[in-house]
Length: 349
Ligand code: CO
Ligand code: CO
Image (cartoon, rainbow, N blue to C red):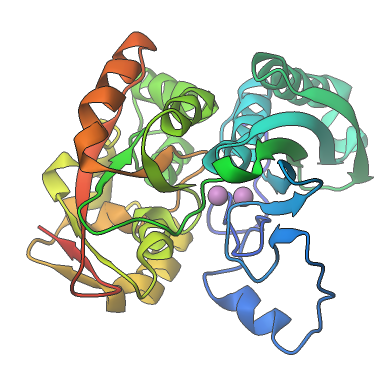
């Protein structure tokens, strides 16, 4: 591998925290404990702040317009530095797209040792990031780097959104359908790549999928009757669905409709789970009731890197969503239905 492992038992991937950032090795719920009792100044223009459990922070700059801010960085998830750069950038931009905003500016975050890895690898990582920023029409304004034996890369991204167009992770209604825009299983697949047991074609598909921007999904979602959305990252499908239903709604999840990468089921059957999988499962299992088990069930706890959007869409708009997705050559899957009862529960069937 080009990127050295750092003594941990798995490649550390994005573990999306509840506070607009992402940090490896901080599990669901942990940051709530850490921040408990700390006083955070309040401002009436803060629409989504540190207490909001949202994808990004939102600050109103006038009656119509708001700033959307997020930061995400992580250790390499693939062997190729150029693709790693693209994936890290797509992942950092994703929280902006998840809220229906458009990205405007970005700053690089780099932890790197030139002495250990040389300049060429860093150049390739940054080239990957810049290519994704170009694709998303985001301006790179600068950044910050620190000497670090363990490579980490990501971006702080600022976007803009019309105040009346903000899409949050809560707001789904009973009767809405749940749409996902990328297959799941990246955590398990990355483990498989590390073990050298993934076919080249599956690896290629995985990498391209993770590097795909959620811009297209976001554009479509804001043009139809979307009630809520988020992106699937470190807490896995179950965790991010739980953020959408909270204690207000339930959801029926159709296990056989959940898209996953080709080799994920085989890998899951052999127990190729990253450590984040176990953390997620332990934390979210009390909110899940399932009539099935085995790998097809397990993958809902797999932590995702640069996952797709989860969209709560008014049911009679599915045909419109489908038409728009077809025009833009974007894949999507309807994987569930929001229900009134049982509140706070994910029913897998
Ligand atoms: Co994030
Ligand atoms: Co997010």
